[in-house]
Image 1 (tube, rainbow, N blue to C red):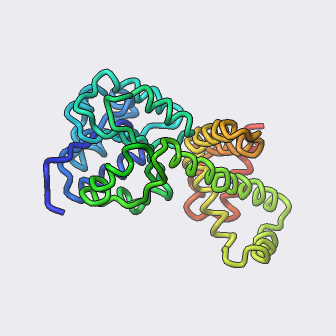
Image 2 (image 1 turned 135 degrees about the vertical axis):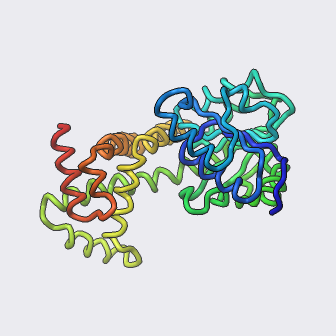
Length: 301
């Protein structure tokens, strides 16, 4: 893709997802990329600013500065703050840009955000359907809403993104993202409980072998290491997403017993995952990781 000055992109929220997508687009030749994060003015925002400068993004001084002249606004904040992020930019938007809401929130939250922004933007409900690394901006996405079809040439041809359209109703992409999270993040939480118990009982290998009888295509030692590392590294964010899953299930008329429990376990593991003694074991996993996590659990209770 040749270098170009348009489309002009703006990222509201510059954490893992925002940086990955922005970095991929920059490497693909998109020149005009601006970024804003509420952490930028704080000490903990220094690393985010450094990442933006390293990839050549314009570091905005405010939400208003970030959206100035943007053709595409990408909202990539935490699940809990997606509506507030939209509120922060709404007074400053002009030119009817596309607003790509990639946040992991309920269909109702996306519809609420679309209503807030109104005719100022062409709102698109976007669901990211796989880990953001290593594919970055080419991670598969699902689009929904009245502007999903019209944005496809820009995203999939111009920006070399990948994905499909779920439908013309805002919330259709979010519904898939939220409902699949019941299983994906729920299995992570069950994996943690299962193998912590197995370690305390001294039967980790036996449990892994027994599970393989039921799921012969899975290497349960690898599954254990991967799922627990994800919880330790991203559990707090994943818990916020599971809170949105809880809202989604309630919107669908279901009592979210398992989803609510998953949120609690993800959040607790996310906090434990910040412990240096736990983090030191995540790369290699195995019994040492389970022992460190088990000790951290005991220390907390």
